[in-house]
Length: 171
Image 1 (cartoon, one colour):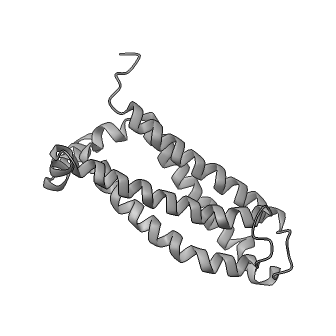
Image 2 (spheres, helix red, strand yellow):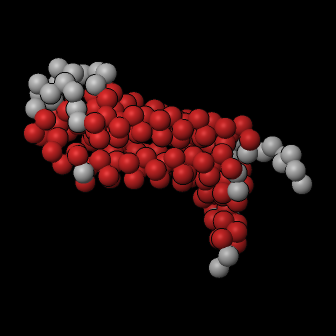
């Protein structure tokens, strides 16, 4: 099945139709999505700023990470669920919006960055100790990249909302 047909089929589901046609459902879901994203980025920023060496230097990176990541994963699950519901309501237009595509690329790159960190330098995080205020250079790079990518997710997400119904400049 062609991707555009799949997107149109998703839009035609009863759930997507209800979200799209209900006057208040989309804004409620969108509000929950924004709250979830805020929790995701806020909790990730706590860890990233520690990795970079700008905050929480009195706490061991391993302890900080283990304290914060459960909140991050719970909020991320909420963001995925609400984001999927929002996407389904107008899947074709979202999928063809360049800002949405950029948001998705930043999201995927943030996931890859996290995986590389946890499979690489992050495996030794427990050995850094509480006194290690300066984290290894690869950890600092991963933290900085993570912050930039998540800022990109938010910025491109906002631009998506402002450009979704805009007419293209070139026909």
